[in-house]
Length: 367
Ligand SMILES: *Cc1c(COP(=O)(O)O)cnc(C)c1O
Image: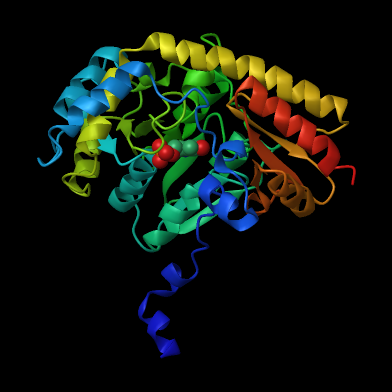
């Protein structure tokens, strides 16, 4: 009976499961807390919810829920093309941008191939690499960020992909646009570059790389974007990749025909039309980042300066502080699985949520 697990290849058996943020309903049940009193700052979700436009579009889309979704996401494709000035054949839509990461690995990695990524980089890069039997090459980070020179040196004739998160999760570090472009130019053409920009909307205009504008120069580049963060659609699962039409074609071949549901497509189209909501999200995040980092400083805690909608900070005995926060109804994210056992990651919430987190943290670190 115990042999049944051996039916799976060794590379599947060695995958460490993804550890998501604790859901509010779990904590409410575990500790007998009122769910409405729980503050969840654990999964980098948008504290403002969704754009009212998207909410209306979702309600309308429900009327047609008995039908299959449009497998080509045509309305969403047109909306993305218009917004980002790309052509329809350059796009791949995903069930969240995690799906885009997975499709790229399925299309480009085979057992024996290597994929390069940074220490402390988003956990899904190693998951999708291992799931197809390829070998992940982890390059030591430099001050918690990607060491691009070392990543270049790690590329061998066996390398087929390199993953870059900008900004990165869970460190919040950002690669400057000039440095990033220099890296893209130096990556050999036998390597696909997956540039994950899940938090791009949180950057100020001066900091944005505008990397979609570089696609004409790099036909081995895929940029992934998501509706889960600044657009507030994490529960719907929708994201996209933008790349050369040759790469998009290959990724679309391994894509499930109906991977993006109809409500998600409708909501994403409506979200793209609401710049004001994204701007409000960015402004709230900027103010909340100041509130939280100043609060951490007052508590004498060090943190990694972040360009996204979360910040990772250092505490003595992170597992104990995490538990104490949970006991008080505040959920943050332990990141020991990112080789950062002394850190916790907190997402930026509403002013009142941030204040509650800081208040509870003050007692959690001192008891
Ligand atoms: C949250 C996140 C994503 C987005 O995941 P979805 O599948 O789109 O919800 C992608 N990359 C990074 C680095 C993230 O932190």
